[in-house]
Length: 277
Image 1 (cartoon, rainbow, N blue to C red):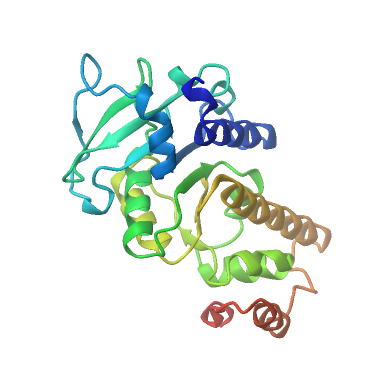
Image 2 (image 1 turned 90 degrees about the vertical axis):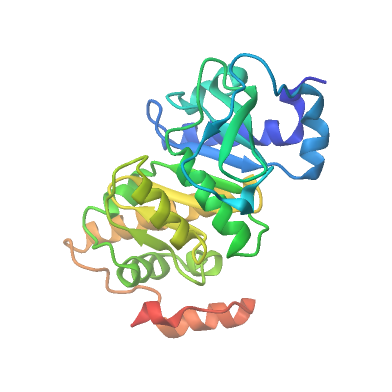
């Protein structure tokens, strides 16, 4: 069996393909990372290489001990998502973090390439998920969801405003994000400020809107993370259509706060009512 047949590789490649089909990854837009678990590491270990040209340590500019010694499967900088399945060794790869959490090195794939330009943001998000969340989330996914981006052109970068729209448009959003979707104003893509601010948000919110840019979502596996992204994007589409049909005004019949409480009570979820104020 080649490394491409490993379970984590097959699911990683499938998610890249699915996002491309949805239209979320124009050109080389978007990126994906996955923190390997013990079984994944056991399976891929025979294929990893840690010495020779192209395997030098590269500093990340800070120490993140929570991700020390971790292995990440990640898309390559400048590589279209649609090409990951065509040539995985060129368009994605596995990197290892050193024992101090301050540097990475290529151990498989990324042939003539580096990790995504948003790699620092992925690493800080993973560290926050381990340190400040439940530690079970292993997937960090960034997609250029058309309707989320369009909605960021008419809504303020306000979490109350965004969650009222998304929760009100489609019941399933509050079921998946009872603590709400985080929101950030526009920041330089690939920049340190965006990476650091996202890490702060991702500890509390499973998904964060990057205004005029897209969405970053997290989850314990590829299916849940993709499903969360798809649900938020669908709710944004529904809200935009309803608002357009209502003459540009806020739709008249959003799911009411009392109904949102009823939904969360039914599933036993802790509900962030502050976002309804």
